[in-house]
Image (cartoon, rainbow, N blue to C red; front, top):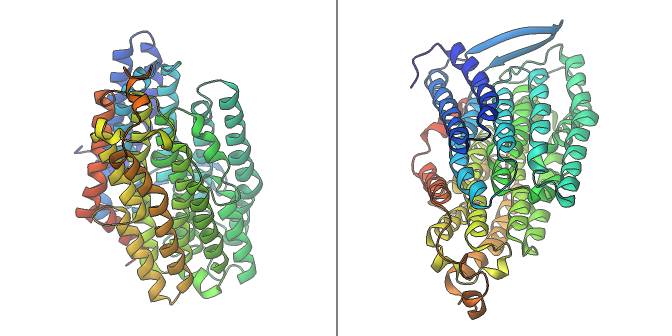
Length: 495
């Protein structure tokens, strides 16, 4: 680990991705050098972020930069436990995704690879800004930068479908943040006189229960990246992007920034006890529960693999929102744990989908009969990710659900328990048939002798297989060795 002062490490984490984004175009005509810069940048960021961890676990809350834009509105950064967890997830998975991207982008001969890596680096810079934001003003700035930097990635293929998806992406994410989130931040400032994130919240005795309820609604729907229904359409539409972009959207940065922000606002702006005492958060259980169940039902009907995974993400994100809305410290621990668990599990599933497309050029679930016997590493990793999404041990997805259920039982809330149980069954219903089809159904003879037979042979390129094997192992490893995320989650929730 780097033996640097914590404030220096924060500055490094906020600088390294930008340096990478500036250097990558210099090697536009030298792909090996360009991708080496990407890997070195991602590795340096991961090392820097992990070097901050011991300080946070020891109780320090290191800070850097405090620049006043106008009186009372500062761009400032401070590392607290939840932000530390989010930064660890994003920085670590960027390195893995960079390895995967080399195999995928080359294997599929994707265009504009230099701009792809540049935008990816800028997106990770924005993600670090969100994770380490000391206040809502700073978070909002980097939240918007993340949206703008990922738009070219969504529209990467530059065909009519991609351009349409990019427009939907911008319309919903910029629209919700400007029309709902920005007024919520302004209202918070008027009520409390500060936008800083403070343990226990800043709104105690500052607003009526009705005002707290309305303000929470503005935040919940204004943070469009959390994909709470009915503001979720951008996420399935964005599946037109290359698979590494899907991994960025679903696991590394974008949607995680959404649920991270909602959880951070509930814990550090409202305060769990304040919302619980005022009785202002109960409606959010219903909104999150509806999204969980409805998205799962839609996923059941999707034959396209990435579309099914997209609606699975919509559903799984609302587990974090549901856990936060239970308003028990132990369920907040579950919300934080699910951010990490979903990240490693869902990125494994998307990596596997991209591997199948690269090696076999298949996109539909109905086309996957017998593919597990030709791509055992890919489908083995997919199976581990699917088990985690269902929430079964020994995978990471079990941990978050365990703490969510514990919080619901402690507070005597039976609706969240019913939602979690029902959605677990639905998850099994739309994931297990894929596994069964891949391993236990016989491949149609036409597939084996068709025109694509040369492509339908063996695994995807090695970088792809290495990346998905690593994330599948991490999905199990997070269950067996949960100490780091669990310690950060408990520090965040004060348990």
